[in-house]
Image (cartoon, rainbow, N blue to C red; front, side):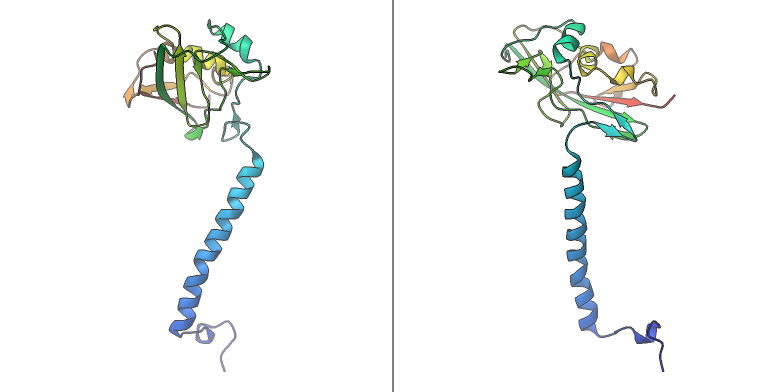
Length: 185
């Protein structure tokens, strides 16, 4: 007589194996749906990596002024470029938050010439004049990455090439990707 849990008691017919294989995708879809539901319930609030939260600043107008820029009533398009920003903290990607440089506290949004619309890492440079806008200005508007005392100054790359100077001095150029890597102190 075989034990209920012995290999000899397991079904060996091909129909049983096929049935088990068909059940696996359903289990995977159910787990994926549950994971997605948990992520959506958490909301888009903060950029988090390994316990690091860097949400967009709440006092947008003050941060924009601190960056040496002026809030605009409408987006200006005489200069209109896009740069991608990737940020990592201890190897974990940090989401660049939506609405950096956009003040939605009034009846109509106001915009900094440097801003984000979503969490893709796309930095919009939309200005009434062509000039240099820097990563340091955007990080000041963002309000927290350089002020998080858990991390030292980031290492930076522009289009995959190491940046030798201060990351704050990187000038936004159309189509480039800027990567920042922060490491715990």
